[in-house]
Image (cartoon, rainbow, N blue to C red; front, top):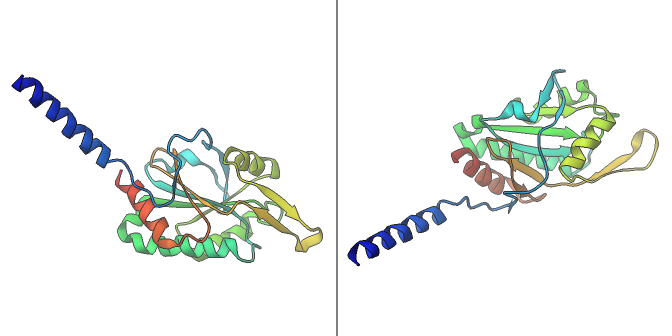
Length: 191
């Protein structure tokens, strides 16, 4: 009886420890989500790049465009601040900005816009079909509004966080702030 109680106590303790070790995100936990996945686009330096090229780092994946008047520069600024808050751990994070406006966001345009926030950030673009495919994979809504050269693009505004294996783990809503981004990226870096 004593052995059974001891074994039961050990199992209970192990269960409590495992329960406590579960990641505690401040954004929306998407662990196990059945969408996302690998993709390939062109970086702002002109190289072909796959999401899987960043394995070993936590990834912050944001879909936006350089002519965006508010959401995109705000989110990119929050990501910059989050990287600063992470300190040396920021070297274990990769921020990827996927343009939802490949018509205007050429490699040259992205090469000036994205690194202006942080030189470690990578801008990604491709053909309209390639970008739409990636957006569909990540359930991003893209709707062009207006015509001519002054059109805008409505798009989903959250930032996805992926773990070091490239698995979708967290959605941080627009405007949540750099503290939440830094916290959840820190959790992923420490896993």
